[in-house]
Image 1 (cartoon, rainbow, N blue to C red):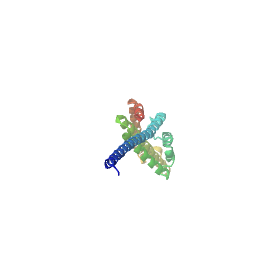
Image 2 (cartoon, rainbow, N blue to C red):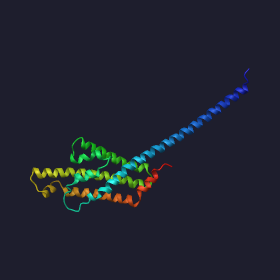
Image 3 (cartoon, rainbow, N blue to C red):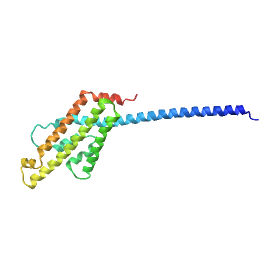
Image 4 (tube, rainbow, N blue to C red):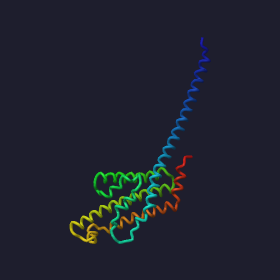
Length: 216
């Protein structure tokens, strides 16, 4: 005959072992999720830091082109825009400056501008502290400048057309499209980017962001 007490003991220990195994599995799963989340955050931080760093390098290389001391239209805007988009992240929108408002260039430009704006927001969430705000703001200022440059190129195109269609002088065509006002708006965007860039350097944002990226 089966010993009832022994059967009860086996059932008890089986239940205990089952519970212990379940707890171990739960702990392991939790650790795996934690590690996976940590790796995902690391990947996102690397991705968005490289975007921001690329924009910083473009600014460093080309900031001399953004200085306009003359009180006249910026006729080299297409060249400046091409230089300010001269990396792998922005290269697909470089040609839009030669084809303002034309498809598919215009749509690709708008899509990329939304992506850059989205990146600026994500940077503020995936990094910590003041440096996250400063870096996110810099990316947004860069996006705003590219938009202003594109709008200004459209204005130059309209100004040129007005000059040809109505045989106007450059000065007369400028007034027709209110070029000076738009040039002032462009200059504000340039100044905002410069101020944002200077803050990154002053606060040593690159160094602090890189410390946050390292896995602990």
